[in-house]
Structures are given as C-alpha cells and as structure tokens.
Image 1: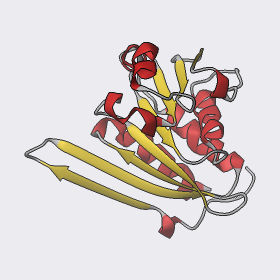
Image 2 (image 1 turned 135 degrees about the horizontal axis):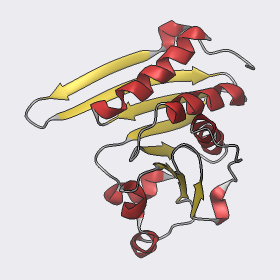
Image 3 (image 1 turned 90 degrees about the vertical axis):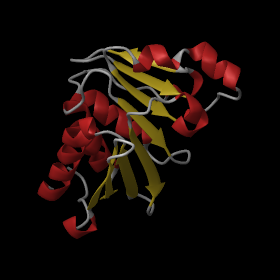
Length: 182
C-alpha cells in the first residue's frame, strides 16, 4: 500500500449519547497519506457495510470523494470501476450488495432533489454513497455515516467520520483497525 497512515495517536474516537433523545454519535478522525490509503479506508467501509447503509461524503472538488467511493465498491466485491459521476446524478453498481453512487454537485434546487427520489435509494437493499451530501441536508436519513474529506497537503487527506447510529460501529472499527495495522 502506497504511503502510510499517520501515527495512531492522531486517531480520535468519541462517543456521545443522550438518553433523552436516544441519539448516539460516534466520531473518528483519520489522516490518509495517499489515494491508496483513501481507497483502503473505503474498502473497509464497503466490507463492513449492511443493506441500507448511507455514506454521506462532503469536501471540496478533487479532495478524494470518488477515490473513497471506489474503495467502498471494492469492499463490496465488485470488479467495476467507479466513474466520476459529475454528469450522471446516480449510478448503480453490482457487488455483494448494490452500490448506489449519487452525485449532487449539479443539483441546484429542491425540486431537482425531489425528482431524484433519494428515499428510494436510502430505503433499498443496497449501500448509498452520496457525494456533495450537504446539498440535500433536509432530505437525508437520520441514520447515516458522514465523511468529510479535507486536503492536508498535496497527497494527504484528513477524513472526519461521524456516525449518527451505533449500527455503524463495525464500519468505524474496521477503519480504525486498518489504520492501526498500517
């Protein structure tokens, strides 16, 4: 694997729980030193995915959202290659679970979002990956794993993972495990 993950002391897991609201939030921050590392993180997310999982990706153009999605697809045991979805709003890929790759970059209005029918993807038996998820904040499921990617330097990225449900614990543990073993 090209590059290395940063020292494990830079990994932070926090768990917050509010018994009145029955909300559990799990966070993990991790540095990826290369595109290969970003794909490995995605692969861990794909391998641990369950039907109905929703991964919400955000970050500026060129930060690695599609690279992460390729890793998720690899983790779902698919031989397919993810195409940058900028001109296609949704693409379905086959694997041990279907992957619904949704790109909201070109969405400009709520009516366009409604026409896309996001609920059908989220309620399906596959895994949904939504790039530019911040454009659909009001239409996203309550239970999801959001991943914000940031440029750290030319090759490195900082990934902030935030799960809104304990159902994503295994996925978070899988990412944490690969970073500790790199």
